[in-house]
Amino acid sequence: MNVARAVGETLVRCGVDTVFGVVGSGNFHTTNAMAGAGARYVAARHEGGAATMADAYARMSGSVAALSLHQGCGLTNALTGITEAAKSRTPLVVVTAEATSRRSNFSVDQTALAEAVGAVSMRIESAGDALAQASRAFATARDGRRVVVLNLPLDVQGEEARADRGTVPEVPPVPAPAPADVARLAEAIQGARRPVFVAGRGARGYRAELVDLADRCGALLATSAVAKGLFRGDPWDLDVSGGFATPLAAELIAGSDLVVGWGCALNMWTMRHGRLIADGAVVVQVDVEPEALGAQRDIDVGVVGDVGAVARAVAAVLEGDPAGSRTAEVRRALAERGRWRDEPFDDAGGTGLIDPRTLTIALDDLLPAERVVAVDSGNFMGYPSMFLDVPDEHGFCFTQAFQSVGLGLATAIGAALARPDRLPVAALGDGGALMGASELETVVRLGLPMVVVVYDDAAYGAEVHHFGPDGHPLDTVRFPETDFAAIARGHGFSAATVRDPGDLAAVGEWLAGPRATPLLVDAKVTRDRPSWWLEEAFRGH
Image (cartoon, rainbow, N blue to C red; front, side, top):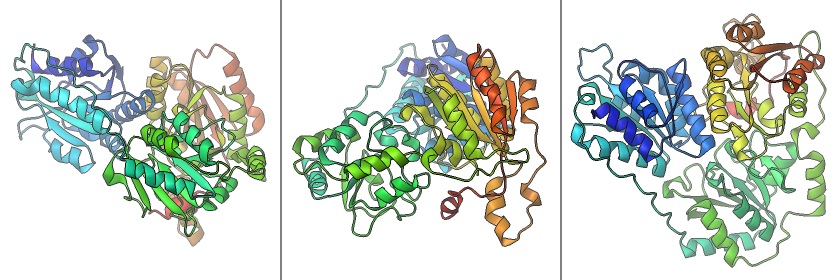
């Protein structure tokens, strides 16, 4: 067995069950080896799409995904998706061929490229270390929640690998939280009158532990955007904290005297640049990594540990008044105004354009509750993020750590493959839809019953509303209206153009039918008003 095949088979034996990629001469044999060993191979139309599909799949499946790339240009094409995954600490192994001759057209410094975007760079140096290095790459991705770029030099791939199969790396035990830290957190909770828990990516999967602790101390429950849906259905759920927070949620979070971030960075997005933290409020952060504590803002208490383990430990020693913020008045307010759709607004639709709020509320009513929603970046992104409900934290895939436009469709594909039990919904702006349009063919080829919603304002809307008020010319960020429905039909989609609520009947008809083809909703949305979260977003630029 040669090295190319041995590396592919080793990664599958370690636990990789799905690999995304675009095959070229340099990664042909490794990709075939992974597929031959039992992994599902998903062919994308662009390496950038493949990288984001792998990222989304890993997030929604909870497993390590793999990305297979050609040397040089295959890696550079994938860099934006790899950067997003690295910033999000997604467990992902990028297996990339590597040119070994500097005279090769494909020759680039792949180690420098990986390290520049925050990934871990590793290399198969020889046939003798191929299996061990592949196993280490998998373990580093899994245990450190890192993106590992595993370089596979062309001149090593054909060498004869060792005959033994190597060992699958064991999962290391999670250290128990320090008793002194647990006591400090319990003391902070017991001393609070209006506590709020804000759960982030590190809290996914620990709903039961956090709800139990919150019930014991009367805490309200909120999430960062990436953990949206974690507390869905709980009567004390505030939904998302930060720029997407409802007015009621923002009011209640800003009025708390204790903010506990559970696996959450409490960064500028989640805390509105600190404006959701009241003067004098105690700020606590719980994270498995010591370096994460206080990295985004000053904190009063830091606890190193797994979210579930810390929550259980604190619950075991907690004493005090369980009332907290959970008054009858708060409960009634959450029942009446706990969702964005409960907030009144003046519909701005008409003259052939639909208000995106009206559009999204109608879609929320039409689409089945069991859904997985993926949202691209852009001026429109708050509408699906705030007005579309999801069943739990596995129903929302938010690839926004790098704030790149164009990742939404690929995100939805990866999420759909990880959760085939749910209807996949991709929410895109017109700019992102055109950037990722090559993967429309992938949706059709894979037979995914996906709903793709394009919020078409014929512009890069964020720039229009950011620079327009100052009188700047906007010709560079405005475009003619695009017939996305025609583009979608050309790829094999069903499609509907929506200019008023009545046009959404076509969505209901598609949902009631066999869903034999995916559906694209070409929504021509109003363009005159800026999204209210834009001011928050541009504070961070």
